[in-house]
Length: 239
Ligand SMILES: Nc1ncnc2c1ncn2[C@@H]1O[C@H](COP(=O)(O)OP(=O)(O)OP(=O)(O)O)[C@@H](O)[C@H]1O
Image (cartoon, rainbow, N blue to C red; front, side, top):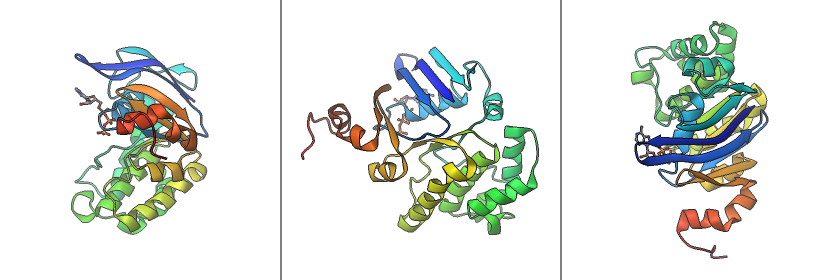
């Protein structure tokens, strides 16, 4: 579905993403990990069209999208969330989803919006205003709901679990587990907690200083000496 070929993103003298090649299939659920500043969000930005790579190619369903604007990528089926929820504060939850749906599909489908509200446990908040009437878990759920409203084939989730307390996190993980099968989307999720990634993702990709240093099952990746070194600075795990 998505193919990155030798993608690099530079900000002046800093190479935030360095020569990354990665193939993501429509049935993939991938955890994207790496320490702070490793380039994870920048890679999402390159895929969704927020930043333009300095070099490389990006194809979606065989189509070159390197120069495609964000809205076109959304229409083609690339949906994303942001690390800090970005609702349109003056609108209600339902209105936020309607705007996202229009942006992503060019249509309005109230039945689909109702399904998404139910799935994300936001049905009873549909007429509340995002700015003043939602708790953090609900704002995070709204972020996922907005991305779903764009009708994605590929969903990029940027730290959707960060900052949630234990029970909210558990509920959210249940929702994420269902997301893939219920909406038929491929998923790439950025997440720092290795236990969470291992529980949710059959495949893990690791960035270190912008480079992809591992890509495989959680078991294989988290035993990889290069990955352990990137996290701890040590050459071997203490096992
Ligand atoms: N717009 C920008 N201009 C300049 N430098 C940037 C910009 N965006 C990101 N960077 C830099 O690129 C590097 C990668 O940042 P990025 O946010 O992609 O990392 P990350 O892996 O998502 O980190 P975190 O886990 O802390 O969110 C960092 O050094 C960051 O400071």
